[in-house]
Image (cartoon, rainbow, N blue to C red):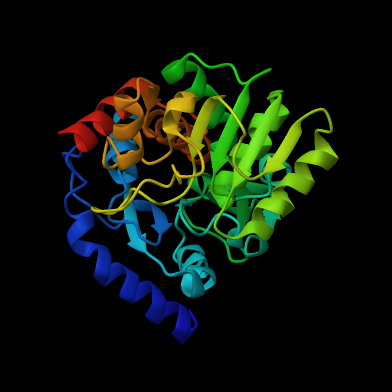
Length: 327
C-alpha cells in the first residue's frame, strides 16, 4: 500500500476507534483473522447511526463481518477508498460530503449511480477464474486487481420514506428543496422523476442550484423548476442541508423569505438529533413532520443487499436504528 494511503487510513482508524468500539453490541463471537469489513466515510461522521443499523443486520445474517465508521475529510477520500480496496473491504457507504466526489473515484458505475449522478455505496469486486467481476464476499483468497463499483441507494429510499412517513406521493405536488449538494441533487432529480409539478431549489451557492435546475429542465421538461423561494404555499419542504446536525445550528429555512406556516409537510434528512430546529418550528406551525430515519434505513438495507446478495433483515435494522437514535 502506498505510504499516503497507509497514513490516511491509519489516522482515520485511530480517530474512529473509540466510536467503533460502541457499535458491536449484536455480536457474540470475537473478531478473528477471518472477519471481513465494511464502513461508512463521512465528514462529520460521529453522528452516524449506520454502524448500529448495519451491524445488527450483519449479525442477523450470521456473517463474520463488522461495519465501522471513519472520519474522512474530502481531500483524503480518494486515498481512503484506495485503502479500503487494498485491505479487501467488502464495501463502503459514503455520506456528506462525499457522494458527488466519489463518482470520479470509483472504477465503474451502476445504472443507479449514472442516473442520479452520485455514489453513496461502493462494492469491491474481483475477477473470478472465468474473468467475470464478482463481489468480494465470494472470495476467500482475493486475487489482485480488485475494483470499486459505485451505486446509489438514496433515491429510492427518499421516495419510500416520503410515502411511509408523510403519506406523500410527490406526483402533482409542489415542493421546496433546501440544499443542492449530493443528497439534495439526488432528491431533486427523484422528485422530478416522480412527477412533482413545481420544484423550488434553494442553496447557499446559487450556481449549484442553477445547475440542478438546468438538469431537471433537460430531463423532465414538464416540471416547473425555479431557483429561489416560492411565492406562496407548498405541499412539501425537504431539507437536504447539514444545518441541524450540530447543537445550536439555526433552521436552514430563511423565514424572512418564506414562512414555515406556508408548508403542509416537512421532511428533514437529518435524523440525529431526532427533532432539529427546523422540525421543531414546523411542528409548532402545525405541519406534518418526519426526520431522515426511514431514508437511512432503506438506503442502508439496499446497500447491505448489494454487499451480501441476500434480503436485508429490515425490521431488525429498524429496531437497532430506533434504539440508537431515540435511546
